[in-house]
Length: 162
Image 1 (tube, helix red, strand yellow):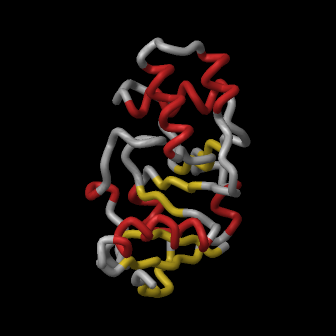
Image 2 (cartoon, rainbow, N blue to C red; image 1 turned 180 degrees about the vertical axis):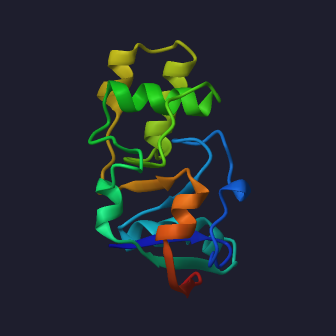
């Protein structure tokens, strides 16, 4: 499988220690198997006249089925996904997984989560509002040993505003 990571720098050696901690699935290295999504991650940079980089990696699909690697796959925006994301954003204790796969938040999803976290809407209402108009998926690596052993850097592309 080919994975991508969009950012302001070339990431040939992903380090979890350099990541933020109060994001969707907590501190980790976020990738996607959808190249157009990684390119979108660089758009805010290119709009500011900066160069965006999409780093490319290869990983064997068997890693996701390895019984020694804890993988969590959130299939949909559902109650379990919502509760996990909210707990991570609040920096609360959550079950640890080496790899987490699931949908990401966009501005509309984030707004629903914020309203829910502020007790302004119910969990049911937040779940109704959760949808993303275009396909998206994030694959978050939370274990540095898994990254070092299985994620193989394959180069990067530069993106600038048009």
